[in-house]
Length: 70
Image 1 (cartoon, rainbow, N blue to C red):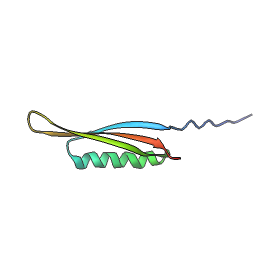
Image 2: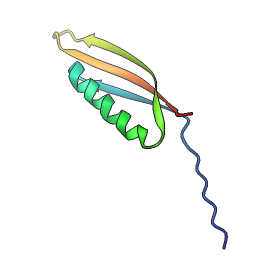
Image 3: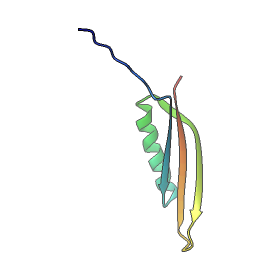
Image 4: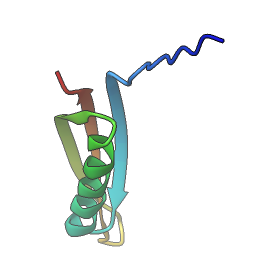
């Protein structure tokens, strides 16, 4: 019996985050960075925005692009 293991690793992964405070947004991103380290991905770029609703509430969002470590 032949056993073949096919390791198709992620080379790119884009994740979206949102939170009501910048601190919570940073915590969510940092948590995911640690998880992605286990599958050999590192942060390639980060883009973020802030939105203020009509009621004055702030919302923060971010897009994080992870790439395979080389």
